[in-house]
Length: 372
Image (cartoon, rainbow, N blue to C red; front, side, top):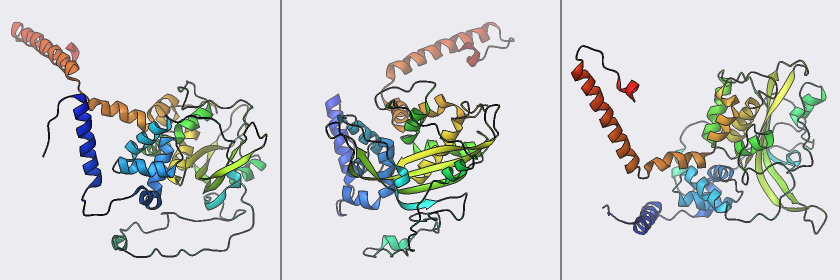
């Protein structure tokens, strides 16, 4: 049954009621709790945290429930909530080199210090539906674990840099980078802001842009130097204490992508790197981000920038799914006056077009496109 309502307040109340009913679904089934979403739909929670720019698993799970599984809407909800919070301190840069690794792989070296840590991944699983998951009460299988190596895990890119085969990223200055959540994007955009924008960009858009660079729209032939996922400490340096303290651990995924560089008059041929960092377990996002990051460095490296993924304005202004959603979905709002104006304009043009044909039946009448 559909109920017609009139008036803004009534329409909003009815919308909330309809959404609540659809969210609950069949009342004979147990209700899905945010805790269940947080634990059992962990990758969805990680994506919402990344695109919502807020690391809070419980809030991300609540947003997913409220949005009925629409991850873009959930990211919108989480980002809107984050914008109501006061910011009273900034943490120190996280040290991903000291990560407690759960997964670490390299496509460039088979044997590397610290070894390959396969960890949780879909990469080696059969892409077949597991109907056992539809049965209730089945305990999860216990994974086999190998003995951990005691060796440290140096970055693969550092191994190349020691040989002079890879450029090192310039060290950051004393000045803190700009904050994208408080300042609009400037163009040209410095790399720290580009990375901030990509880190919360729509995963599907980043994936498409990264894919395009490998298909000839960016001239990339990348290798995954290192992809690691694990826990890092978040450190604060309160002014009243004068030293850093740990306030907790978060899970992040980091990717460093190796790309070829032919060199220039001032730089020898060497490898360059693209960088990606994502909240939670987000390998696809981190890899796509690293591909796009390297593509956006084209002008800085003196390369010809001709592909969409190398155009910073195109990529950065369209990567944000919250902004994109607002702009696309606003088309659902009433545009009655605008459309009536278009109707009158088109009727007037058609009348002139018909009058010209009637006056000169043998002459070729101008097309509507040319008239418009």
